[in-house]
Image 1: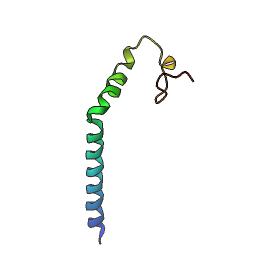
Image 2: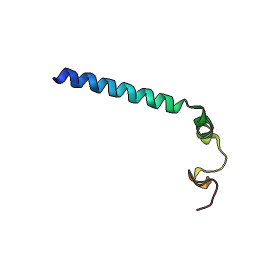
Image 3: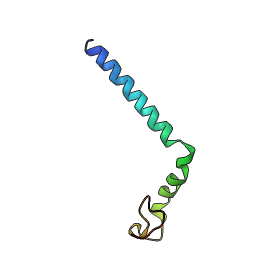
Image 4: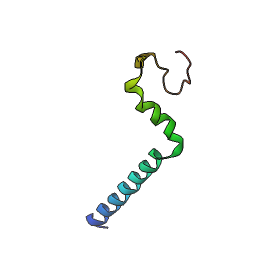
Length: 60
């Protein structure tokens, strides 16, 4: 195994990782969260008053 084999394996690993991230980001179940995040700059309430991620509206 020489350095060119290592470079090829690294390129293949990076490509597979990139495709995994693309598939994860474009998954239909993620749309609701991304839409909510996209609207944050236009929210009337300060971000500090919004519930933390994963708390489902519970006040901490």
